[in-house]
Amino acid sequence: MKAILLPLFALGIAAVFSLAADPASAPPLKVLMVTGGCCHDYENQKMILAEGLSARVNVEFTVIHEEGPDGKKDKTHKVSIYEKADWAKGYDVVLHNECFGGITDVEFVNRIAKPHHDGVPAVMLHCSAHSYRAAATDEWRKCVGQTSMSHEKNRDLTVKNVAPEHPVMKGFPMEWVNKKDELYKNEKLWENFVPLAKAYGEDTKQDHFLIWVNTYGTGKVFGTTMGHGNETMSDPVFLDLVARGLLWSCGKLTDEGKPVAGYESKQK
Image 1 (cartoon, rainbow, N blue to C red):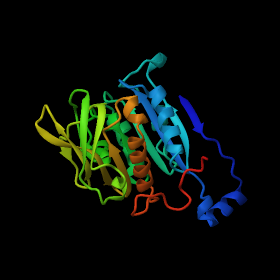
Image 2 (cartoon, rainbow, N blue to C red):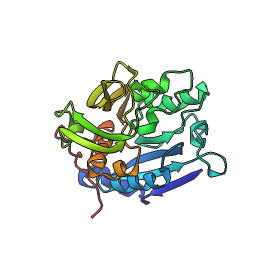
Image 3 (cartoon, helix red, strand yellow):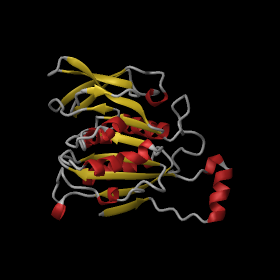
Image 4 (cartoon, rainbow, N blue to C red):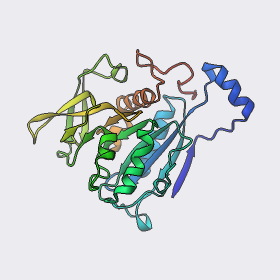
């Protein structure tokens, strides 16, 4: 297991009380990023996301990056942190950027979903929506907000903003070309799924929602199926979107789509 803390903050008890009293000096949101698995450049994406989001939001990342045996990409690998029932304890939000679609262990998958059902916010990126799809349980799919089992070929996607007044979509273009990405097919939208943007499927001849928010139990979830390649991950439009989605899931985004005071990036 690779565990990386980015950046490192040493806060004493007195400092915590002082920061809590001053919104302009709020402590960073503790973000657990879980990444690894099949088919993507997670070695570079973890740094793109950690650095890009830290430049936009007051966050502290702990990164868990696991592949399969001998470091080989394996869609059936079980990330070790998920073996614990309280795996999300101590984190303000979990960013899922993983691709483990071959796992069939229902108990394991339900254990991943449960902290989010109990209130831990989540950010779901790209193949996280396809992870755990082989398991005979809907809990992860309900957590994501949609059931998706396949995607269309890699191509440029014209993304259309369908909820410009939603705080997460403030600042997102009414139309944006997402270059060289995969359009995930919406096979089922669960009851608390709120669509934010769509793109047209050339294979299916219908629109599919690729940006959304969801409520799972008491947990707030932001999701996008964009982000297959590093070009998308590195795009400022994408990183701005994910930053707003992360803040929204934690209740730290204003109605105007800006960070709540104290949650702007502390980087100069």
